[in-house]
Length: 71
Image (cartoon, rainbow, N blue to C red):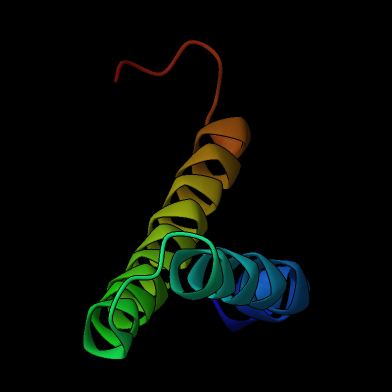
């Protein structure tokens, strides 16, 4: 999981900061709402990394399985 998080850390953080800055400067949202949005995006990022790592492990496990073995 941490390898995936390290690989996507900077692009995702840049996107999150860009979206939050846009909400604050262009849509004039209050700072409290922007901070809540920031926290939710961070949690979504972590959840996505965990989900991606789980899928990657499942695909690796299925690739090692014998072709005629029943599921």
